[in-house]
Image 1 (cartoon, rainbow, N blue to C red):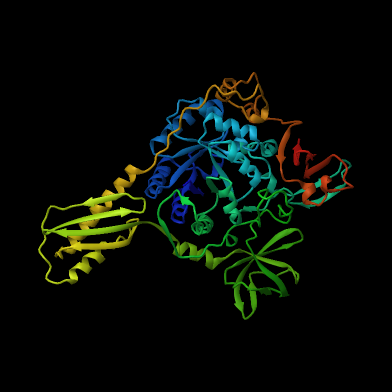
Image 2 (cartoon, rainbow, N blue to C red; image 1 turned 30 degrees about the vertical axis):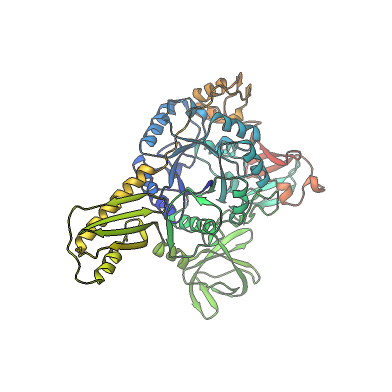
Length: 600
């Protein structure tokens, strides 16, 4: 049976451990450098501690080295890859093909979504090269994923939850153009979360100022069965900048859903014991969509705000100064954060106290009756997740057998690993039969060990074994079982890549070649003409990008606004322009490919 993986983000060691405790089968975490989230870097020592913790549960740790590399960084990146292999990291997630030209140990390499894994030709090439896993673009539909599965052998990883980039991954240069902070270098300024207005060629407003590029968050928890049936191997949650509370809630939610599904086998071991009921709406979110998984649908952006709105609570009935009467079925608590949209901006308030049905807030309210009220900070829920949390333990069955005054202990874990302890010392017969139950109960107690006893049996003679000796035998049994589990843990190796495979003769600038090894890689695979990547200009004082396509999106402003040309939209002249202050960008709509392009 094919094993399914729930993959969670880890901002740091603590968040990674929380993800494992709440049911993740694997986590991905940023290295000290070269990760696509500069603000989520971690030391090798911290990653090593996370690796040891994850491996106890047969979970995996993937390390992100998914930025473009400059020539001056190649040696450092190669040394870092060696260090990560030595500490037991299970795979490296990469963007730059320079890694394929390095002298690396046989650690598995995953093709990051930053490699632009959207077009079938590209995906087939990466598969035949020998990548063990390909992280697919977020824009693909379920039917496209199903077709890809039929054509490639590599594992397929698909995003199921979290923030969305409006541009195709690895193909967004807007941040770099505006600020010199490249998204392909882990420095994205998130220009898509800014306010924009849409104008025609004469400067006439087509769409008023709003957050027209700020996508809602992804939530495909209702489509897990379809994704697994399509052949997806890894279900990925976005969020390497999110805190431990968010990760605990969202990971627990997806783990709970997968645990209720039949005919699947999870990659990790252990059962999750939780002290809270997960609910993704009660953590950070901008509202949710399924993006393009089920085809093109409207309602992908929240034009009012790029910030978290949380869970919809209801509508405002009356307002009196600082007091709010809210029509809701939800329980509101002191200290909760509420929000609503006022004149195109999100307005946040805090609940100081409740007076009957009225909520007394921390400031005078201007919200109008009938306005939708959201809760973006659920104080009691956050405290419940923090306090009660989750614990992950591996199920075992323990057997004690006594004969001739000797005791033999054995334990078998849920993965079929069995350990035995057979002391040489003799023990006298017990005077009372109750000693049998005492021994059985004592052998059932594995608290704090990472194991829990599903069953304990005691067979044979009833011996008198002092509690101290029983505890010592149990600890020895635990150590042997842990050692055996590590010996039996599956370790994947990276087979050699195919260096004879032809790809393309022409490699344009959007292949992001900014170092000599990447250029060598494409030459090795048939390239005769290689354009320098956009980010290469930053080494020389800044890339101009004049006239270049800075972003390509499956999301379309015209469709979102009900003006799709393929659906009879009229009255919009071309070209259209996207404006933010003094910055102005030309929009093009490729209706044949059903995508939108943003040009400098």
